[in-house]
Amino acid sequence: MSHVVLSTDTVSYRIAGKCLVDAATLSVSSGSRLAIIGPNGAGKSTLLRMLAGLTEPTTGDIHLNGRDINRLTALERARRFAFVGQSDMPDAQLRVNDYVALGRIPHRGVCGAAKDQEIVDNAMACADIAICDANYWFAVRGRAATGATRKGACATAGDPLSR
Image (cartoon, rainbow, N blue to C red):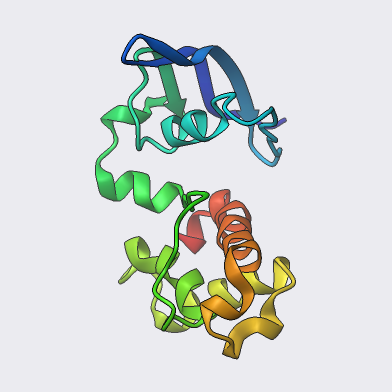
């Protein structure tokens, strides 16, 4: 039986009198996947930013393994979430592998450089972009590299040894 890893209770976000997210409630169990879908301007990115602890909700609670996400330290959040914004544009000098590897920075010293590279390689293989390894970021744009970062976060989220 899987346990609830991430949950929200009537989470809302308002700014300048405008409601961007209104009373979102969800529960994500270990091993499951969540898709947040909706039209442009529906608040999907705002909800994701709140789930990652990057934006604090106006009302409601978000819990990760029973802990209030806004009470986690920045390092604790960074070790549990990888967030690639829809308009992020990394330096064109970065290779795809280097960009995906940025997600390992909060884990430095935990499992060693060889294990970190193995996790990056696995994330790229899961996203089917291992072939892009030698390419610079601009050659594959956001679709492939952000997919690898996201899949890497998903692939390692339940495995404490990969942290």
